[in-house]
Length: 244
Image: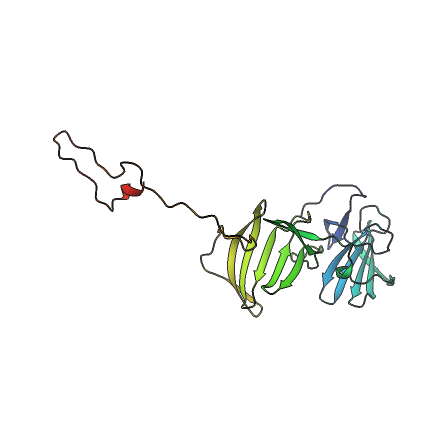
């Protein structure tokens, strides 16, 4: 993963996970001082918080927090060894769940009618320690909205309808989405449709595709010129030349 070489103060926090260094944008104000100093990553039963305590642009403390907001595990980063060392958990009263924080960074989806906010990223789909996906549910099913490059704008949407049909669309331009794969989800098993490829049909375009003009024969197409002996004639109506 690309590590953005920027200093502290621009919202970026460097995080070391199993010897690999990543950069993520702080999305939560854990101590309530009005400055985001924490990268919160959602888990099945709570969240993990990477905290930049001294505001130097690097995570110093990692906390595992359950669904009730209780810190159950804590570790401190040792810059000398590059390891996380366990220590007694420090509680943060009122910390709560970042998903309920109205000030958490909202991911936006670039639609034809403009940007739409879908809430903060709560899922880490590529296991890099940084939440990149927001889960949106409505009457049409479940939508997994992913920001691959961390710029706050969605790059991919996985649309799962109640019947288990899956459509994967990617952002390909200003307000434009292109379907790159379709398949089906049966239980926990996903099977892509055979021979599916990119198409201009956009799942989230909210509009009809532009009508395509019918092919028209060129003037005089399909007519063979007369020979020197006058034996020329018209080509058959189904000649390939008619649609050239």
